[in-house]
Each structure stands twice: as structure tokens, then as C-alpha cells.
Image (cartoon, rainbow, N blue to C red; front, side, top):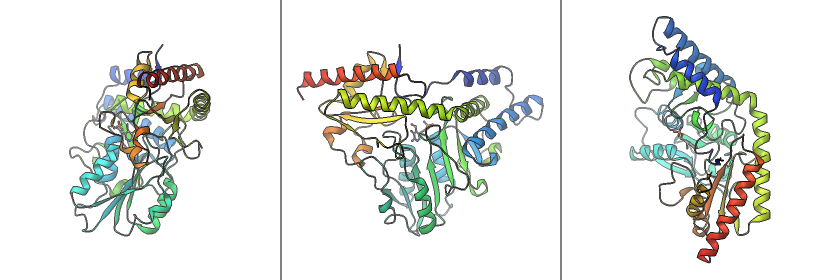
Length: 385
Ligand SMILES: Cc1ncc(COP(=O)(O)O)c(C=O)c1O
């Protein structure tokens, strides 16, 4: 039986989502912009999904824009609020361990003359709040930070950050990448200091290529794509109605099952951490142990003296799937996240990310730990490291 422990990379699509999407593709395939009944039905289905998302995020439906996923949400959230003429001397601040869909937008803005500042993090990848005042100032036009880190699982102090931004840079736009947070930790956007918040369907059992962006004030944003008037002109192009409906269903299920998912994540997390402590030596856990500081679905850890990629493929032969970092950066050389956290090279090369789903069983966790212990032992013995 397959044992999939890479849910931070992507999740399986749940049956209710598939069912709802099939119905939209087979029977309700109208274009939401059409004036006839087929169009109206599609539009209604889309608005139901928008309402489901607004309810879950605790915001208003008109504050939700559908996107193609986290990458587009981060692009629109970061770029859509910038003035056409960026004032000379402006800077932007992003977290030191952001996903590339935030880092690369910042780099692009840097090429356009905006100074890009990285907020330093501690050894668990969490932004050092006491350092923030040295970076955010009156010339800061944009701050973009993830809610939960995709490789380590650390929760960023976004509430404190929001307050600090309002004090020192009241006009700065505050964007949050919520891709790894939605469904894993509570998210409530009403009355927050966050100006835009992006998330993605394929991390929460909906399909790839769909997501949504929350906008505190939808009137002040401009599009980054131009075309017709869909999504009030903010995201032109015929809407992906089946995927949007599927996203709504996935979010609605998450809302109903949130407490049960938390309990399952925590049970599996505790079992995994305890088993590692009992059965493996020369390991280093990067994820904060306290659940006040970490989401419950990701554990990042290093094994001294092994190349993690070898272990990954040894596990794969047993149909156990884990990751060496984020799926998007796995083909890039080195690991900039662990480097930013100050983790030494001998540990970095032996790092695995385990991310289980809410439906993982204790037996699957036990199978993983047994296979991990064997694989790490074998590699260490072969290489005598
Ligand atoms: C923290 C984070 N942000 C953004 C993304 C990108 O989302 P998407 O794959 O929907 O473009 C990911 C996906 O890996 C992620 O983990």
C-alpha cells in the first residue's frame, strides 16, 4: 500500500470535490458570463464557492478573487498594489525563508529599482520580531511574509508583524502567503492588518491550478493580466468553474472537519516525534516542537552522515513518499531555507521533510519510522559516516 507523506507538496483530491467537479463539467458547463440559464447556473455555482471561502476565512465574499493558485495569488497580491511609478528610494521587505513565488517577485521588483530586504529568521525559520524594526521603515512600500513555512512548518508572527508595519510604515501593503496555513492553523482575516492573503487548492484536497486571493480593499488593486471583466477585471479570462466549485467544496469540508483534522495531525505528529527520539540517533529536528510556533502537518529533520536523497529513493522503493525540501526547489542546488536558518552543511544534506495528511494512520507513521531507521542505518553503514 502506498504511504504518501508529502502533503506539503500536494494533496490527493477528495471524492466530494471530484464529484462536484464532474457535475460541473458534464451538466453545468455554461460560461458564467453567458446571459442564458446555463450561464446563470455556472455563475451561481461560482458565487456559492466564493461564499464558502469567505465564510471559512472570515471575510466578505466580494473580498475573494479566484486565481490559478498560490503563485498567481502571491504575484497579484504583491504587484497589484504597487503604484505605476514607484517612488525613488522605496524598499520592500520579505521573510528570509519565503517560497520562490514571493522571493522571485521581490527580485523582479529589485531589478526595477526597489531595494529588497530579507527579514532574518531564527534556527527554526521564524522571523525574528526584535530585528524587524531595523528593516521596515517609512520608505517601505510592501511587506510579504508567509503564514507557515513550506519546508519547516514554522508559523510566522504575522499578527505582531502587521501591528509593527502599521506603526512604522502605515502605507505599506502587507501581503501574506497562506498556502501552507489554510486548513492547518486557524485563519481569520476580518479585522486583521493583512491587506492580501493567498492560498492554493491543491494543498487542501482540491485540484491543481486553482486558488484564491483575499483583498482587504478590492477597489485599490489593479490587475496584472488584462482582458475582459471577469472577477471585476482583476483576473480576466473565462473562469475555471469546475475547479472553483471544487475549491469551494474542499474549503467547506475543511471548515466542518477542522477540529477533527487538528486532532489527527497532532496524534500523528506526537507519534512520529516520539518514535524518532526513541529509535534514531544523530538527528536534528528543525521544526519548532511547540504547536504555538509550528503547523501540525510538517516535520523537517536532518540525519547526520547521510545524503537525504538516497534515503528518499530507498523509501520510494517501499512506496513511501517523502521530500528533501519543497517540491519547487528540489531541483535547485543547495537549500537556501536551511542556509538562512544557519544550519551547517553536514546537516543540510541529510534533511527530509515529512508531511502527512489528516487521514494518515498511526500504522503508516510507524511504517515510515521503521523504514527511515533502516534506510538511514544502511546508508551510514555503507558509507561509514
Ligand atoms: C508556501 C507556498 N507558497 C506558494 C506556493 C505555490 O503555490 P502553487 O503551487 O499553487 O502555485 C507553494 C507551493 O508549493 C507553497 O508551499
